Length: 97
Image 1: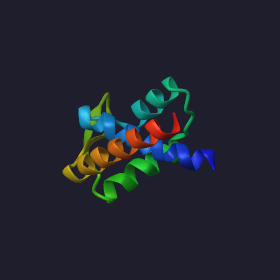
Image 2: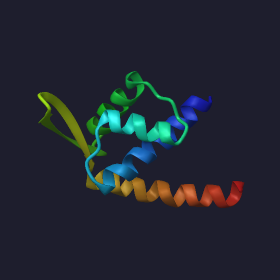
Image 3: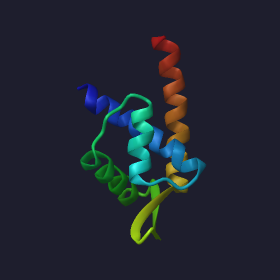
């Protein structure tokens, strides 16, 4: 139950950072670890791919140190969803806390 709940927060976190600039999978994993979350690449990469497929993120591949790295940025649809989520999150936090 908690993992499923936290995955929703992770998606909001991903959209937030993707709205600030390009992000990539390993960076997301490390960023989440700084906040105490432990998610494997087997969870994060499929989440990024799903969010891209659903139109919330845009993906661009670049070669970095001889390896292809996929960078993700937020789309207009992703921005709309993020803004809605922030409003709902703010309302929930006010009620719960």
